[in-house]
Amino acid sequence: MTARPLVHKTVMPGLGLSAGITLTMLSIVVLLPIGALLLKGAGFGLSNVLEVVGRERVMASLYLSFKLALLAALFNLVFGVLLAWVLVRYRFPGKRLLDAAVDLPFALPTAVAGIALTALYAPNGAFGSLFQQIGMKIAYTQAGIFIALVFVGLPFVTRTVQPVIEEIDREVEEASATLGASRLHTLRHVILPMLTPAALTGFALALARAVGEYGSVIFIAGNIPLRTEIAPLLIVIQLEEFNYDAAAAIGIAMLVISFAMLLAINLIQIVSRRKMGHV
Amino acid sequence: MSDTTLPTFRAATEEAPFLRIALIGIAVAGLAVLVFAPLAVVFGEALREGWLAAVESLGHRDARSAIWLTLTITAIAVPLNAAFGIAAAWFITKFDFRGKAFLITLIDLPFSVSPVVAGLCIVLLFGANSAIGGWMVAQGWPIVFAIPGIVLATVFVTFPFVARELIPVMIEQGRAEEEAALTLGASGWRTFRTVTLPNIRWALLYGTLLCTARAMGEFGAVAVVSGKIRGQTATMPITIEMLYNEYLSVAAFSMAALLTALALVTLLLKTLLELRHADQLAAIRRH
Picture 1 (tube, one colour):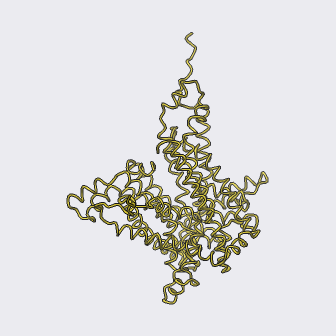
Picture 2 (cartoon, chains in turn purple, brown; picture 1 turned 135 degrees about the vertical axis):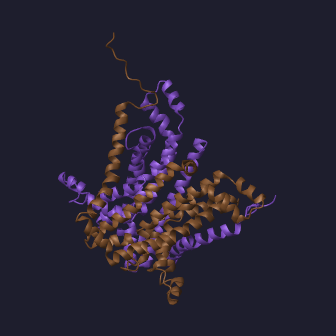
């Protein structure tokens, strides 16, 4: 038995060049900086890292970031699937504009989104004043952070689910209808299971994005410690006070959680692909 | 008998009209509130005191230097990422090697790292307190709180964009065409230029567009590494934050409107690409 070679032989040129550029840039831009963070954490010591992460203000910010990111991703899961369905299956005037608008949160700089949402939902803003009449405050509360996170995560689910809906075989729906299922029953028991894997992938992507989001949140959040202070902001605050160790500790906590989510995304993809038998 | 009307025909694979209208209504209303309203506010706030005030604020010395800086950073970061994307896609799709899936995961990593954490990593590796950063400062080439750091941060957050678009397209096109060209005696470069590049150009343009939009607008990672020095390391998004915090609303929203206009142009080009070259770009969605 011979060991598998590291690289299979081929006539294709450019192995050294393409591998060289890829690995060099990956190292300088991504791996070494992340390594520096982990090294800083190791130098600081595990018990110290845990002590920083366990502080009330840090725990509160991590909890807030994850709670609101989860809620926003859940909202986007439901709304994103609905939006994808409407954009693929129905015909109505302005559909193309709507389809293009879904990508706006990807294209719009987060700082711009942040100040625009704040202007909208501040007590004197267009929507904020409406909410104030019913005694609700949106900007500078957790509700404001939620709205900002919904905004940045909006496109993910729609964009992962749309191609799946496009490829659904209408015959499956016809078969279901022929067998006497009502339309709602078909939607729930035939269509929805087909969309679930892609929708979950989009959900995980939106979640990962929302957890780390900074630019669109800090303007609308009000940034009150223990109440509306997100984890990335706490890192920035530590850095501004030159507390590199504490910043690294919080950064590592976020990184570990992000890794766990990346793993979850990959697992979901593997499981969903096996279940569907193709894709 | 003649006045009985037949029930309107509805295919079994369609929802009842009221449900359809309700769903369209929710979609339109949702996007109106979530996307169109913020868009309108940006331009509305920018023009609150008229065109003149908006344009004048963009002509300010610090504003001009911010615009120039953002364009410079984008002009450096995007080609770097395009070069990386092409190299990585070539390496991954033209060769079989161990650890390919792991490599792809590493390339995608920046998507699941918070931009602020990305900035923090760069500060820790290249900041004045680190070994590398300290040495570079001694040579008169500071990285953090200077342009190289901003470029690094921008490249980090946009790292997977081009590679992600190219890899699925190149997987679908396979290697046969390149192999034929090579067998016929074409050099590697010639094969790439005349066979591969025409096959991937629209996907490359697509990825580059997405990368450009993100590069111009990156805030979190840049905020950490830039040091926010007015006229020197303050990019457009950073300047928006500074102006906003100084209650210079019109100036902040004018710069935001300019960035938004650039984002809309990107979106328009992207939509056009999707319409014109749907076949090549379809591969991206399939994977």
